[in-house]
Image 1 (cartoon, rainbow, N blue to C red):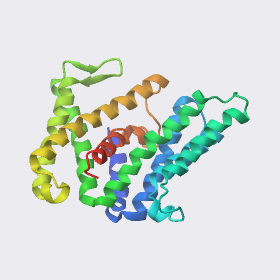
Image 2: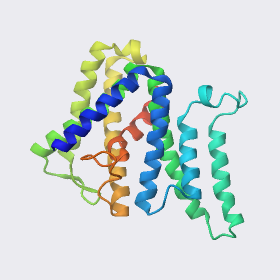
Image 3: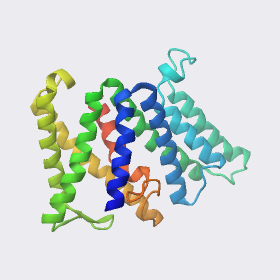
Amino acid sequence: MKQRVITAAVALVLFIPIIWIGGIAVELTAAVLAVVGVYELFRMKGLTLLSFEGVLSAIGAVLLVLPKERWFFFLPENVSTFMLFYLIVMILLGTSVISKNTYTIDEAGFPVLVSLYVGIGFQNFVNARTESLAVLIFGLFIVWATDIGAYMVGRRYGQHKLSPDISPNKTIEGALGGIGSAVVVAFLYLLLYPAKELFNHGMFVMLLMTIIFSAVGQFGDLVESAIKRHYDVKDSGKILPGHGGILDRFDSLLFVFPIMHLFGII
């Protein structure tokens, strides 16, 4: 527990100034985190990042994370960076021809999916900060409140398993407690930053969305648990002592921020 607290404190000291500054600082941080996320997924599968497909997957994730306006301004106006990502996909698929199918579409699918999972998640993290610091903090607070509420309620009242085959310690009571905690935090936050001004939605609509975001965040956590269980690993990595890897800490965020974008919040 002491190690977890120390790591969290150090991470916050580093993280808070970055999201406060925004711009290039957030974009480069998100790109680095995306590469680490790709590394962790490759490591779980028993592959190395410093391989042909590993490097392409990392590049693909970075292409998705970094905004065109600052980093790829040389592209034609009507061309998005997603076309550069698709070029990576074409190269991976083309490898099956060059290798005479010793490298197949099944193997190419993994690095592509990894790039999308990590890249789109951190892309919308960057987009949230570009929208405003208040929007980014709202998303972070929803995820953090959900995690804390689910842990506390689940530990005290948890009786019914949520998904025993994937994450045996999670309970339905804990999940509901997480949603309730997120709603309370969102309500207090939206008293400080009026929902209509920040999101163009009223308080009631934003609280309904908060329920969805909280549930989606918990589902993202379960997805990461399923991946780890599939590869028979306890944590996605060891970069954060006491916490595991980057994906262990950002699994919920990688689902929540894209859904916030889908709902027009970002």
